[in-house]
Amino acid sequence: MKHKVIVFGIDGVRLDTLRTADTPNLDTITDSGFLTAVRVPDINPTISGPCWATIATGVHADEHNIHGNDLSGHRLHNHPCFLARASKAGNTSYAAAGWLPLLTDYSGGPIFKPDHQYTPPRPGGSRNGGDHISDQATTDNACRTLTDIDVDIAFVYLGQVDEVGHHQGTGAPYTAAIENADNCVGQVLDAIRSRTTYASEQWTILAVTDHGHRDGGGHGGDSDLERTAWIAGCGPGITAETGTGLGHADMPRLALTPLGVD
Image (cartoon, rainbow, N blue to C red; front, top):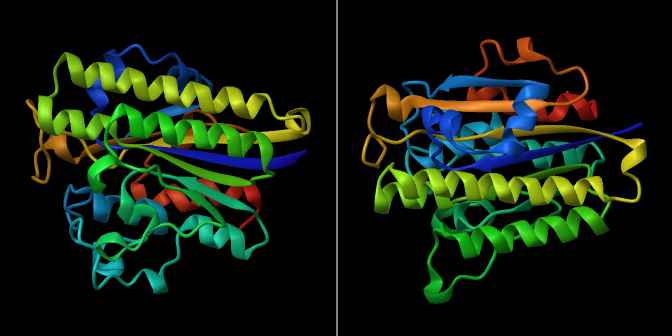
């Protein structure tokens, strides 16, 4: 059996809201494996840049030197992302994301350096990519790529939830955005299952958020609501106990171990 990995990065999803939202696709992952609360360590601000950099590299802000959403002056050259590490070991990597610093040189990026990548176009040049149109374009590209290309490890980022939290708070529209992100996850998983080689593959499926939101929306502070993130996963050898004691810095290990990459 050929081992494959997909990581869904869903920005700014509060754990308590996730647990009450209608998310059948993420529920399938957690029911087959684990869902665990993750605390953003004090050394990392509760901001996307440093949190995604830790998720990607396995080190915190004191090492990757990213303390905000301007990535200038980073030390990512010393701490490659898990996609680049997988590629160096002979695997094919892919990423799709609407937030430009993740995959482009905007604001000092990129954080991730895969073999194949996609960033959806945005009218007006917005860097956020945080709307349902951007997320759906990201999802559509991921579905096509994972159906047609023999990708070994993928990262798919969805940004709408975080932007809704900022602009509309953490009420009903925020919950609806989480449910829309879950629908995007389901579309990508359906595409994976449609692969002609799927019967001979074993997929590890991971999902992670970078930070939470305050009541009413917003993050960047030190409240428990902002510092509580989460990781979910299922796949060969993954059980409920796998989630015990995890942190953001464990994501490279979770993503690379199924591929046999140290």
